[in-house]
Length: 194
Image 1: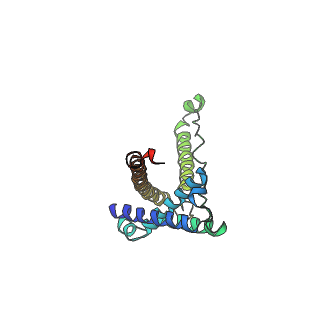
Image 2: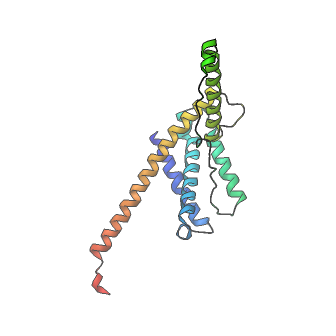
Image 3: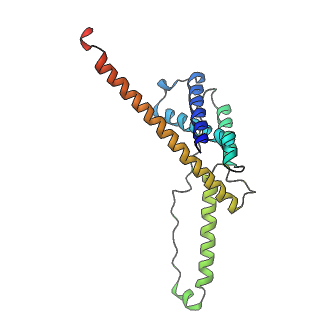
């Protein structure tokens, strides 16, 4: 996983550098939301590229999510402005709650409760599977069964966790360098010299 994180970090830095040099709008001129979207897109593309690279091949089999992320990023960058921001699709599937239905007392008395609970369980599994397909990039492929979807989900979650670790390390490094720059200005620049 260390090699994957190194590839992810390298790809993230290259992607951010390319975004700032080729973009019509540099980071300084972007709004906070545009910066956030650009960093998220760069991190997702870096994660997908690192997964498909040498480190990704060593970790596991063929995952569909890297290809889906890279295809979506290529489509969004070609359909928008030359240096435009990636549009990451938002998923609203997990925002609604699954309501539990109460089994009537009459059904319980007649012995239909077991059959009804199996139907409810099947519907619940089907709904959650459909929701999971919407969350995982490339999960809506028709050829993917539930077992493959769960494997894809586990692979995606492991790599998302690695992405979070790398982004936290980058954030900590930026904060340290900003803090050190502030200390440098306070201690080494003479405020009375103007």
